[in-house]
Length: 372
Image (cartoon, rainbow, N blue to C red; front, side):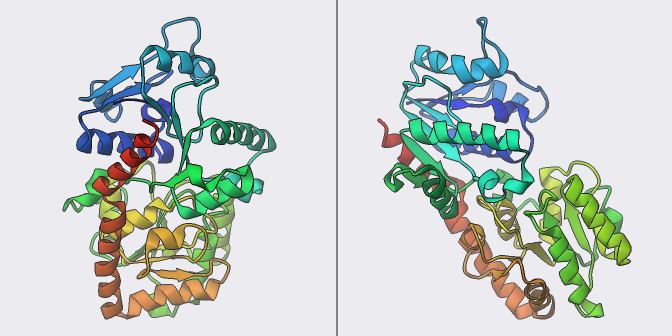
């Protein structure tokens, strides 16, 4: 089988959607090496990450050679390139499909946060995203949703027949399935090495609810007020959080990671944290929750959107609007070692059973086979 992919983000994005593209190709080439994988991209940012894919076994990287270049080629020229290369299937990995595509197609929809949290997006961006998502949902032969919540949102906003939608969870970095415990980030070692801390991982925006975590920490008894390490970045909302920390004299309780954190450094932070706190108001999937479970880190997360799906039945889920519930969840793990050990054991098993590379690769191939 020859399977084409929109690989723009694989070669040019080094956070969420780029990581998803790379791990998807990794699990497919590992478990289904008999296929040929065609990686279409308008450009390549060459670095240690992307160089692995330009000459990856079972993969062929394809860039534009005619008059059409860049995003114009990706939108209007890619369909003819896919046809010329005799691809059996084309998979849009990040919410989009090219115009005029005649090859049997799959699109992965990660979320519709611009619909559910419109205030976080500028109006022109919401309009553009809507057009792209609508076109992809209308023209794709199969739609992959990365969670049940995302499936329900696709049906709700784009009136898609549920029978056209398959759920395939988002894969995580292969490192999380190994015994590698990672390395301590140099910029944080003094604050975290051998010391108790809680962890937050994710963008710093209003949807993720970091301010709710900090307000919950204020409710904890003094003996439970261990620092919160924050890995992520943001703009306006981050300034709001920083202002709150400053005005409430909480600087000693919140440690912001400086700069980019590698996968091995993040693995270390998960593995050594007392718990991950992730009371987001909405997620298409909730990747940090799964990364934490695979790192044997107990989780407090939200009881809404896809987060119970990612966290499993043995994590603590709370109302993200209820600061006292978030605080109670933190305290429950920090004060009950037996409960924590049970959560770690059962959470790891749940993550391995539902999110292992082989399980996800098999589900992807099941989707592709429906088109052949």
